[in-house]
Length: 604
Image (cartoon, rainbow, N blue to C red; front, top):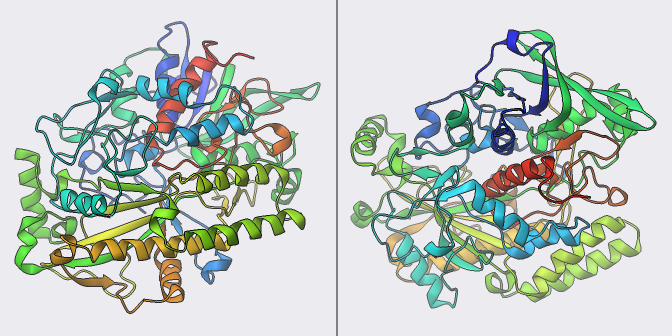
């Protein structure tokens, strides 16, 4: 139920979940299926329920930097970017980032999930997670067959809470793009949700064609269960710290302090406190509560209760950039792009088209994806790979890489050696690159060939700089500090350009307008990427699930080391990044965590 402050302040609940986001609401919904279990969810942002700004598919990115929806974080100035700070959006609303993401819904490769177990987490493998991917999701088959869409209906669960389907309105570029890739030996994946994503495919989206709206944690897990008296949700309640009592070296969470309408309040937990605040705020709240590196806590003026150096470390981040091409004027009516939404008059027409027929630019999202090994993307892949091995070996010899990081690098190198996908390309229907060189012109249509760096070797940190919970933490991704990351990124741009020069795509476009083909050397492309790339909002690792001796923060039971009843349940626990958009994995983690807490799986 939606709560008032009087129903929460100084009251006791079995479980307190910090963060009403993707994993947090999935977890709370499952725990409250037991009518004898009381759960309080504290969400820092507003509810924003039934908000067209969140529900309309084509409203991509309009929420960013709007405090009604977004935390609007920024990184610290980055050394390898000439001091540039990078904007990091994160959902600050009921539903978290599932409320403002770009809808893509698919699963990682099997190997990426199996890596969790190989890094010291018994039982955390594809066979386990696949059950929870299925449990969380409900597939809506397309009403009309489209040649470019491929899936195995026998392997798709249809009854889970999070409804997902294929795009209601194709742009027209999907088929030609896939034909080009097939002509150079890149296959269409039969079903990207079954653990093999190597090739090209159309991703499903968290959109319900019947309602024409976004499906996300708030309207799939919370609203259907909001009348449960044991499911209490308080919005606009930002957590300041977790109250801990330490006895015989073990800390027990007794409650949570939070701010509501400018006043500090406390809620009490009789069983557990569960952090589901995401990869940025979960480590911040741990550190503010006295759990983290004693050096970090001392510098911030926080008393150390548990010295846990792994908190806020091992940050890994997907990033993306792209190159934008102008569609030839005489054929642009054959295609739909987002560009028309910049024209206020055309936007109103699109709203009518969407509301009456579920078509047009507002019905779209980017769907055309390719996940490929570097050996497919770059003719220089072997040289890059050997240079990377040399760098890593030198780093091991000089002591630059910890034994724990060496374990991760070993798995990443195995993936490259085995020809497994470690790059991603997405065709986006519109001008979506920062106008570094050129910007969009009225009346024109564009396509952006986006490229994603999904398995970086650079590792970053997220730490508090003060004991004031209203201060954002210092986010330092250490972008491109491992030179291999930028070299791979450059190769992805070159691959996309080669693809766009092949027929039939080449005949659709006038030229590359941003940054333009005069950016034709590795240095010029690299300089452009440093100026133009963005986060994909897929940060992991800040509360890594790893053995304590490897810098871990939580155990395979998701319990924070050194505590008796404090867990982390969000994608911050992922120890090594996955090669996919993480929305479905966040839901699966929430679902699995509920069973762990209830003693149904992963028992010690």
